[in-house]
Image 1 (cartoon, rainbow, N blue to C red):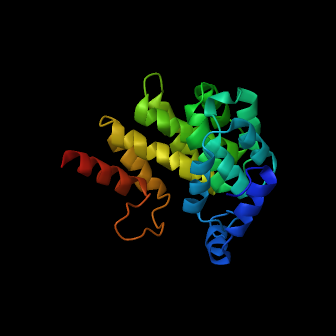
Image 2 (cartoon, one colour; image 1 turned 90 degrees about the vertical axis):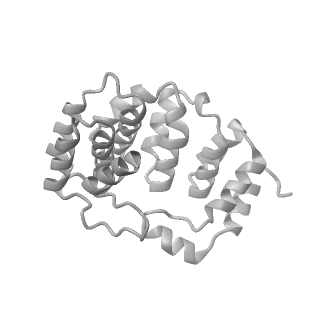
Length: 222
């Protein structure tokens, strides 16, 4: 069994590098070529190890950071730690896993959601909107949904890609989960045409909000 030191794990991860997979990942802004199923197998072997996770994160190496996010204890991180980690997460997959696997499970999630959503850095703001989508779907009480639609209507069209994607997700969730707001959500999506021409594989739902909303509502009514 490979040694479970940081150096040993970095070597193990480096041995999994696949140039073809890196080429695919780089199209999405990710700087690694490690098969994520194999990375998850390493995490399963390691189980939860918070101290090791912190050391792996500190390397700045993308596969090491992804592994760290799988073996850490989400509730062990303080608010400022999570904020620092998010601001240092410029690689899309690291950013996505940090928000979904760690921040969402933290007691600081709501505080960070409101702070990040208003941040001038669009990458940071996209994390705030991702957390907002989670609340729309699971804990909408207290959210100003019409106000969110106002912001989306005014800002989504010109937002940078990652922020635009996250705002579009919130738009879709509002339309899916709220029949009274669905007509307005559909109208905003139709008029802004964000992601209308996004290439979508067969048997997958388009991220274009009107198609996404109508398809999810249809499935629930079957």
